[in-house]
Length: 466
Image (cartoon, rainbow, N blue to C red; front, side, top):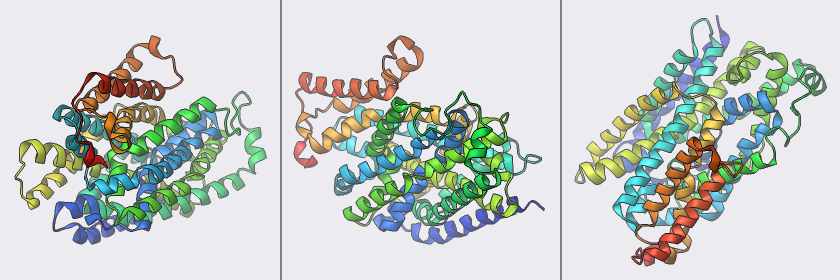
């Protein structure tokens, strides 16, 4: 009997039990389903943001990167933590006071329709890219668990069934309550596995002796490099200021203080955990120098005691589940709130609106699975997709803190600029004058926003932003 597989199956069953319990709290109206009735406490906000951030990219993805460049890959998750703290300190209060549901709702309130439509399309696109990466990480875990049964593809299909099922059942309540289990499991499992794995390998010195000497595996900075680390921090602070799935968590809080505390505590919890995953990736490099980087962490864990291996692999899967649920729900909310209710059926009843949102969870889940089949390189893909949030962060910061500089056309042209920069960065190497696209995104979007201020004389209704 495969003990590890049994443990993971028990974990999945427990997730569905929690989801069916959460279903009762999510019923009644769409706000209960998408925002948990705005009743989330500080602990639930904390585990929700940690659950979203410490997902496949922060575990499997960091280990994959560490397998190639060393411990410095752990800065990715630290950058997430710094972003969450920035969100709590800078804009969580402003968002909560606006009493909105989505970022495009903010754009529609203050800017023109084309800006709002561009915002909807780009927010959904960004989240679908991030969501698709969770299938890759989940598939690699199951492939390592039972290679005689699961391929990477069939593992991704199985992950999709669980991700979509849990999210569609209980919405935000399901995601939040299950994250109490997910976050506890992922932290305990990954830390224990790292301690035991390093001990079984003979300690850090033995691991260092088995690594190639031409790569700074044990250096905290040199592998990724200072510029690379700064780029991650800039990207993920940007993301935390304006990505729908993150904003939706803060909007579900009981009040402003709850949202702020939850994000700050969650950010502090994230700061060290990436380096733990990175150390497991380095350990895997010393043990399995020829394995695929994407399978590095699961394969190293499978060499441990079967019970510990099962708990840890369940923890890694928990990381995927927690991230996937929030991303799916927020993407579905964007569709139902900003497309269906705004343009297709403005007079929709609350019960039908709830059904549409649940249907969107399933449809978008299937769509992201298809996208996942074509993606390779978890963190590199993620960094490119998330860079587009620079346009939203520029818009949000001006709207909240300098509304006098905002114009009706500012949102559309800033988002359009962000899209054009990203396309040019991918297709025209000559414009890559910065170490990362995020810098060019900020420069171009900021310049566009200020240029529109000069050229367009139609202001937004600034008193609403106060």
